[in-house]
Length: 101
Image 1 (cartoon, rainbow, N blue to C red):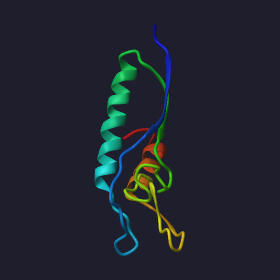
Image 2 (image 1 turned 180 degrees about the vertical axis):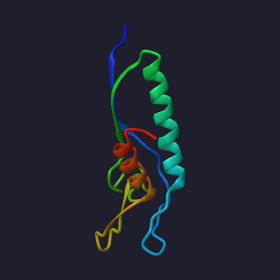
Image 3 (image 1 turned 45 degrees about the vertical axis):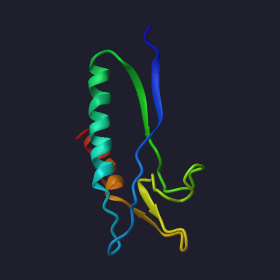
């Protein structure tokens, strides 16, 4: 009746780009905050959610869309391969350190 659930890919796309070396993605932070809030409610109501993974750690090639839009928590400059943690990555880091939000 109540299978164990592990969410292996969950995220949202955006047209992220750096501004003065910073990639601010408040819509993605809001998406994850809202989604994790609902996951917590589901667990409190008996859902056996035992794992959750954001999609994706880095911006990458998506079969249907190519290199745009971006899904990652970390921005990738495809010309230089520089990687910049987005505000969503920093938010997830704080959630992990604080064991919640």
